[in-house]
Length: 419
Image (cartoon, rainbow, N blue to C red; front, side, top):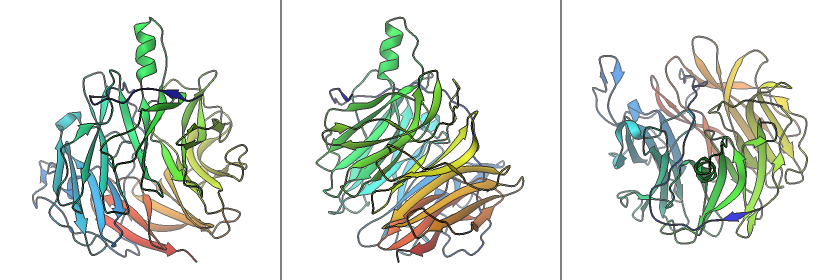
């Protein structure tokens, strides 16, 4: 059942259980198309620590293409949220625009990242989270730009609530509405006030019809979810958001779920796979979802369940009512993490990271028939230093891998196109 709450304009809270997991490293430049020049100080490292707020010291970077083909990159580095533009596919960037500075309170957990989207009018919307207190209660702030990313509005809180909100996930819908979902802790806070203990968080969401200036009353799609795992989101052929996340099922089972959400409300909660992962800890390792042109759901996720362990992929032809048998991603026994999916038409791309003890590599395989069969995995890039998760994004009919690495720079790699 969808639960409704009133949206207000004040800080959000969200208590998070932090657990370190599989952050991994990034890539030696093998078959690289583009690698960025550094954005920021030329003397970033002091005493072996990367201390600038430029891209060379970033822990996470999120890309988006504008309609005219310009690349916008939002990143977090040393407590600062920044955005820069590139007109040459990430080879060079304009001077960064500082959106906000929160110091050590900025949420830079392994599944946390700034979100940035662009509508058909060129309006830019950005969301990020920071911790409000020492108990890991968080607030989601939003900022907007109407001049192509040259300037941004002062960050403002997404909702007014006395609990905690974290891990925003943002989509632009075909009619330019903004959809945002996040992990919300208000039900946990209410239970605590009543003397009850409640684990996890909830999946909350809202819509904006004015480019993010205001949002409708937020709603709860699922009252019981993991409290510190990112939410995967995609649009179905009807333009409705579809989310995938780690839900908490009866008995403390933390398995993946998918849900279709519309303006009218949230649909049924569908379990992606019966992994039987019973844990009170938080993996900091959320799923990825892509919905193809046929409406097929493609989901990839990490689990340490009693029935399967590792990274897996499955798909559904009936809006998540039933999913295919999970397929292992990467070699069994390999250190596999951070899967990410994207689809154009009936083509599907899947990337992930593998760590061999010395370097981390991004692997890719693709399907031209909606996930029925897949190509042999190949390495796109490797690195021996720190790296962010691999991300995929479209530019017209082309598909790009976006990968932030500490030692080898920001990498934007053309990996294919819609046939």
